[in-house]
Image 1 (cartoon, rainbow, N blue to C red):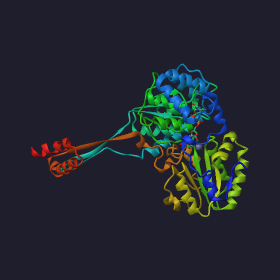
Image 2: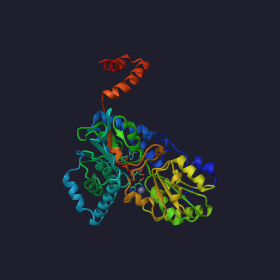
Image 3: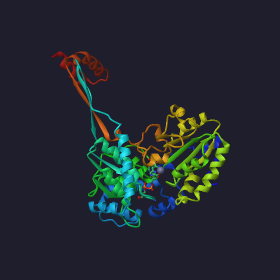
Image 4: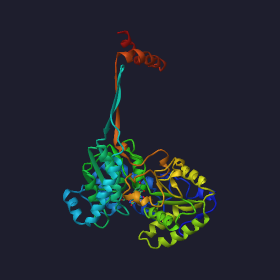
Length: 444
Ligand SMILES: NC(=O)c1ccc[n+]([C@@H]2O[C@H](COP(=O)([O-])OP(=O)(O)OC[C@H]3O[C@@H](n4cnc5c(N)ncnc54)[C@H](O)[C@@H]3O)[C@@H](O)[C@H]2O)c1
Ligand SMILES: N[C@H](CO)Cc1c[nH]c[nH+]1
Ligand SMILES: [Zn+2]
C-alpha cells in the first residue's frame, strides 16, 4: 500500500506526525543524487543553499548565470522578461484559461479588501497619539515553477500586496528546462495581478538576487511566496537582510474525518496535495478503522490514475500516513501539536470544531469546502505556513505588506503627568542623560 496505516499512535508520532526542522529534513534519494552531482557528494540542501547565496552576493549576475546553467540547465544572458513576451503569452493560452485566472484574481482581491487597517490619530487634552499605516515600497514575490508552473501562487502572493498599495512588485519564477522561458501561464497571471517586473530565476538564486540585488535585479524590502526546500532555506537565511512573510514550504494537508466521510473524497484530497512535492505530506486522522482501511485502498487505486504518481507516491511514503485515533478529541489535540498548513474537517457539523483549532494555516470545513477550492478560487491566499510554523505565522495577507509608524504628539499637560514617571525610570536605568532631558523641560 502506498500510504501506511498506523493503528499505534506512538508509532505515528515517531513517523508522519513527527516534526522535523527544515534544515535537518531527510533528503529523498532522488534529490540527494542531484545534490551530489551539482555540489559534491554528501552536500546537504542547507550547504548548497549557503553556497548559492554567498556566490550571488559576491558575484551578482555572473553567479545567477552560473546557477541557471548548473541547476536549471538553461543559458541566460537576460533575466528580465520583456513586455512583448508577456503580450505574446496571452496568445498562447486558451481564452477560457485567461478568464479563469481573472476570476481567481477577482475573488482573491475581494477577500483581501476586507483586511482594512487605517492610520489613526487619537486626540485628547494631552495632545495626540497615533499610527501611520504605510505600504512597503518594493516587494519580491516568488512564484514556484520547478516541477509545475504555479500561476495560482503568483496571484495569491501578489494580489494582497497590490491591495496593500505596495509601489513596486517584482516576481521571480524559474525558467522551464525545455524553453528557458517562464511558462506563459505565469506571465499572464503576473500581468493580471499587476506585477511591475518579472525575472526568469528560480530557487535559492532567485531569493538571493531579490535579497542582495544584482545589476539586473533590484533588491527588495520583503520577499514572499512559497517554494520547495531550497526556497524555504534561502528565505530563512536572508531574513534580516530583507523581511519575509513566513516559511511556506512543501505542502501539508491534514484531514480529520469521521466514520461518515466519503473515502473516495478523502483519498482524492490527500493525493491532491501529495502530488506537489517529494517532501509534501498528507495525513489522515480518523477514529474509524473502517474508513481508514477504505481510504488506504482508494489512495492506492486513485494513485495509479495520476500523471504525477511518482512524486505523490514518494510523498505518501516519506511523510504521510493514515492514523487511527481513539476519538475526534485526540485528533484535534494531535493536529494542534502538529500545526498543519491545511486542516480539512470531513466530519459531521464541522463548524462545531472550529473553536478547538489553535494551530493551522487554514481550516476547510466540510466536504463541499475542500482544499483545492482554496488552492485556486475561494479567496484567502493559499500561501500558508508549513513545517509547524502555523504556531506563530499566518497565511499571506494585506498586513504582510504594510508597516506602521508610531505618532507621538503630546503637549505640556502630558509632560507634567508623564514626565516625572519617565524621569524616575530613566534614573533607575542609570541613564542620566535621559533623565536630564525630562528634568530640563519640567524646570522650564
Ligand atoms: N505552503 C504553501 O503555501 C505552498 C503554496 C504553493 C506551493 N507550495 C510548495 O512549493 C513547492 C514548489 O516546488 P517546485 O520544486 O515545483 O518549485 P520551486 O520553484 O519552489 O523550486 C524549483 C527550484 O528549486 C531549485 N532546485 C531544485 N532542485 C535543486 C537542487 N538539487 N539543488 C539546488 N537547487 C535546486 C531550482 O532552482 C528550481 O528552479 C512545492 O513544495 C509545493 O508544495 C507551497
Ligand atoms: N496546495 C498549495 C498550497 O500549499 C497551493 C497550490 C497551488 N496550485 C495548486 N495548489
Ligand atoms: Zn495544492
